[in-house]
Length: 85
Image (cartoon, rainbow, N blue to C red; front, side, top):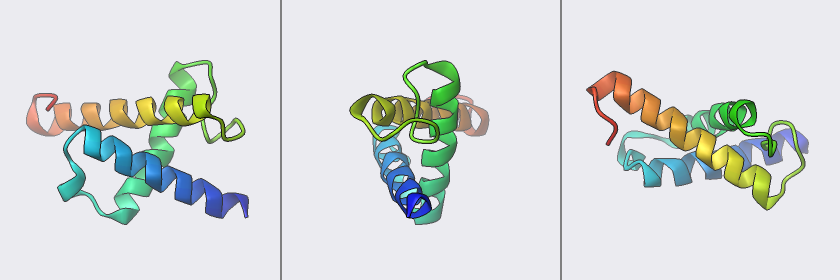
């Protein structure tokens, strides 16, 4: 059950991050899940509030994961296009 919740919350986080970074039209469901989970990992490394990967689901862990996903999309945009959109 934890894996299913992890995938759903990761997908929501990836989707919200792609809306913020205006890359939603380029991504599908699978990529949103990947961005959400990897972004949560990055957010957990950078911030001490925990992320959905290591802490229980709270508003703080959700926001940390969202910021990590936004940072991940900004890095990807910087590498692909040479500018953060």
